[in-house]
Image (cartoon, rainbow, N blue to C red; front, top):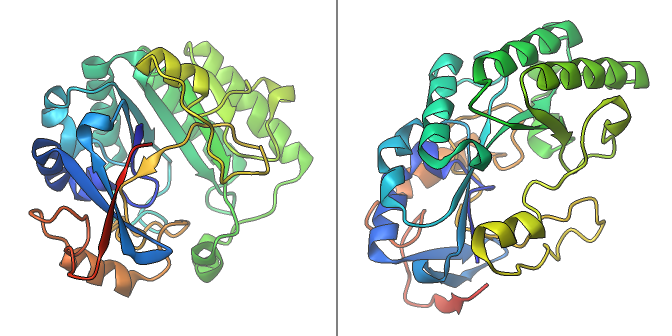
Length: 295
């Protein structure tokens, strides 16, 4: 089993102490987001690989050596300021944290996600080209792979359009981004690819690769892990993962976020977090149904 930590919230940034306590206790309970009375119990012994997805690795740095499982880190690093990403630490601190993660778990196990790209009058294409090039230079020798995505039309994105004011990209824009990013990555001994995008940018020098392929999962675990069945469009061939996160619980409050759509609910959920609970948010209730998840 691949444990996803997490695509629904930033567990590493806000709930690292809880995560480490669950590792010590040996299991995680996860409420089904579509059937809240149904809980999946994941035994840590059944986990073959942990996929960390975070914007801020700093809170877990000192605990990584305690986690006796193969690990991958996908760290999202974008060049936006407080108008778009109000609660992130300074980007220089995140870059130093990425370097430390790379030193601890190895350069092949750390990926940077430049995600999402949004273009507006303030964050124009020239801004992104310079930011991406600078990021590559700073992480040369610590990261080999960068994944890029473009902003999607999520509910939160539409709600925050007056802040984001993003523009639709044309083919010239994709070409300019693709060729510039490819050059910057190559000059700094990195590859660059898109993730789950219609525009792969392979014609401009990007490579085609899945975020976590069956092949990579096999190399890291020695086990064959099936693809995600939910993504039937087959744009994505990443392996199946068990996500322990909860939607509407990330306090980064990024204006483009797909996992948050109600800041009041985020605060309410955050206040329900109990480090001693087996659930990330809330506690087990008498009428909950708990089933062991094996894969």
